[in-house]
Length: 138
Image (cartoon, rainbow, N blue to C red):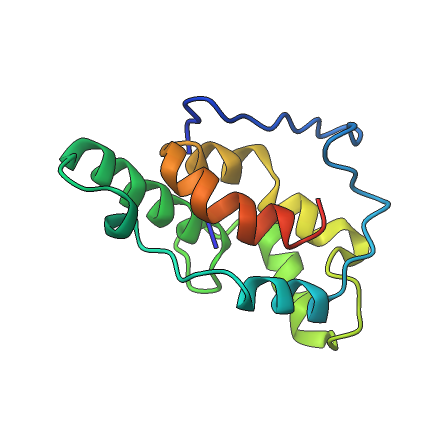
């Protein structure tokens, strides 16, 4: 689940309204649909994608760590938006929309979380986009 500075890939998130690429209110993807999508992806590890480049590997791990600090239940910097999402998730069933009350969008597509994910273009393009954006219906 998790953050970075993109070197070629960038998604603009307008926090006041949705844009053409990431539509917030129209997303009806369910938890079941997202989980099925994620299950079809290969497991991601930074060192599978980055060989012989210690700086890039460090950035990849920093991105993963940064995102987890903001989004994981035990993250030491868990955002209010992600707390709201986790509360919603705990009360949801598989057929519920993943973005109920816009909690998913406000957590995983927030500027703070995306900034962390952008730290590594590999982490962002190979892990964050497929799992947290594409599989979530954005």
